Amino acid sequence: MKKETYIRRRAQLKRDMASGLLLFLGNDEVGMNYADNTYRFRQDSTFFYYFGLDYAGLAAVIDVDNDTEIVFGNELTIDDIVWTGTQPSQASVPFIKAIVSQRNHKDEEELRLIEESVDLSTEMHLAAYRTVRPGIHESEVAAVVEEVACRHGGALAFPTIATVQGQVLHNHGFIHELKDGDVFLLDAGAETRSLEPGFVFTVEPGIYFIPELMDKWEAEGQFRDFICYDKLKPWRDFTGLRNELNYVITENSARLLGTIKKPMAIEDVYAAKGQ
Image (tube, rainbow, N blue to C red; front, top):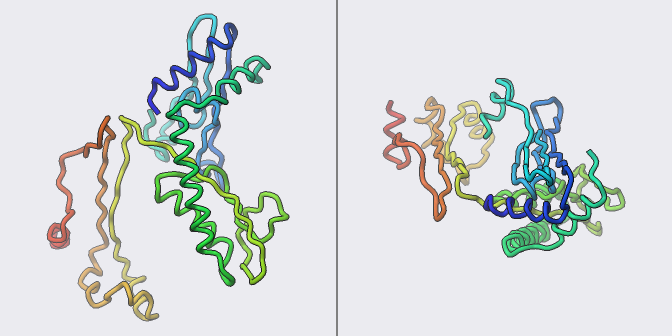
């Protein structure tokens, strides 16, 4: 969404509250098995609704009486930057009611995003419907569901429940095999995030040649419908190639950043191999 949307929301909240200090707490990263290996970050919905900042460890205060807004966060340390790269209290009852009242009413921009998320969630469920059959595992259905969300630039709105053990609340194990007669429960949904002017995204097409895997697959007869092993042999020692293309989103399209020519056509790739 445009920054003006968030400015308008905060202005409306200040009018509704009339006076006071309003505190907003964003979410922090949560480690999976150690601090820097985190689950996918999901910002607090209310914080994002008013400030549009999708970064961990932030808090904000709106001073209604002085008409000021302050966002608080820590400067990144060198340890943080290695992992992420450079990155740009209890509320009172009236405060809560003002937020709920405002968020209950959606403008056209919000309705469009909601409809996109609903359409994507529907496609996720249809993909699961086409996938389920006896003999596969819950994990295979969960993977198909998440693939649909990612393929359309979305993400899971919440951890998927895909299970034949529906009596277990919030069952995220995906360990059971589907059998004839099972009742399969799917609870899944998507959220979308539209690209906005100033965003930068990266496309990284590439291919890697790993001799150990090539030899193993050829010996086992794997993937012969997709791989011509005789054609691969001249490339055994090439290692691989990855083209990182960075685009900045503009008002009407996208613009490629940088001027370095990269091997994109087949003849350019062969030329790179020769080097």
